[in-house]
Length: 178
Image (cartoon, rainbow, N blue to C red; front, top):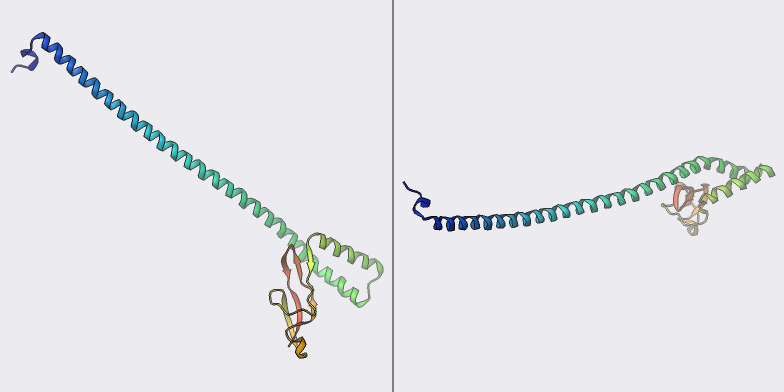
């Protein structure tokens, strides 16, 4: 068997080798161009994925900051609420003693000072006597038969209700006309 190179004369061999080299160079250039395009597309995809990951982490961090701030504010207002709720029985005792006329002038000063401090902290007493009964604000202790004009109205307030920073912390315990 004779090869194709043996049948060709030396000039034809040189030409065939040049043709083979040119074909190989062309194939290599095409492969390199395709690989570069694939690398660029892969890099762009990777860049887009990294950008998406960054934006998601940024959004998650912003949500965390907002949630933490809200929790901190809720914790602070909850602590104030617990403190004021604990002091409410003392305030009630002062009011009872004051209405009975058994409080001397010094005790009245303490009572008014305590009321002032509580109001500065955002505590507001509910005015219930004489108003219409509202289950969202009042807790009915008893119903008393009264005239038609007092039906469904608060006759007496047994224990005042209080609002702290626009939230009810204690419902007013009232007697309602029936």
